[in-house]
Length: 394
Image 1 (tube, one colour):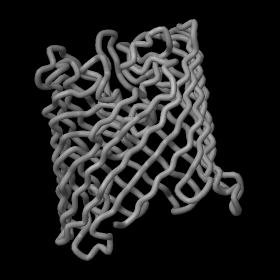
Image 2 (tube, helix red, strand yellow):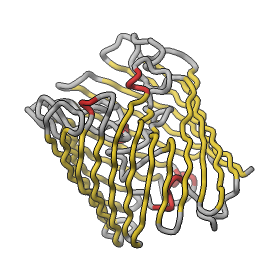
Image 3 (cartoon, rainbow, N blue to C red):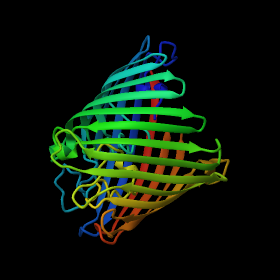
């Protein structure tokens, strides 16, 4: 969970940040999709620019406004807005939008922020900004955080609207934005190398009543040593229908993720369970979905029979010094099975290589290959990316 020092990047009256600062992020990406359900492969070449102005107003007050624009070099993909349905979907349409606009105040143990903003809770399994896509997910919201003691952080968020990654020109209006009346409560206790978080997420979707849920859970993460050795993430939650939802259900969520780090390499085994009963299933519509259940994005919505994702991940760097030590690699394998019934959905291999070029500029090569058994169809995606970010005081 983010501490008070990260809330909205709000600055205290003693913060040396300049009164005005320009911030930018430019991302050039080529995404290729070979989907067996289509006769044509998709290729999307897009350039995203986010440009923001941050103001440190003094006495704990700060403000931020940021615009985002995406340009597309071709239309050989279905963006959700260009009508090119003969191609597989790449959810990065061209267009412009107001990405963030907020006012914040931060004191010694309390912080508040109101306006359009990023919200990222814990590992973003339930609430996140979906930062992988060119248009990110933001919320029109009020965020409050309080630290009653050094090892406690209490957070409350009220969400009025979600601005989704499909961009402002998506053909489906529900893919662009949804009106909400959602309450998020998150309490974290940190001790040593461990943190226990309890949460209650009361999510009312005014536009799609069947998406309204209430979720209660506990998450425990920790490590036995600060560097290397054994670490873990354990989480359990229960999700029910809520508010205007006409359905009646109760589904379980489980996460078991032990890891071991040795010689700069981390190996991780995992099991993530999203319950389903054949009619409905546990859903996480406000999450950073690309980070879970494989990068191929086959399970952005949980199938009605639920999902058991058994996975193994290895990641590290090439060496401990020199330029090679800055090359970060990840290799993952997923095996997907139904919770309800005996269906074997399929399996997936993912791999990536991230590398710095010059100050502020980085590159990424990434691939995800899904092999279908009893769910969806074979699909391989490849990404080539350059990203440049920076800031400059005015």
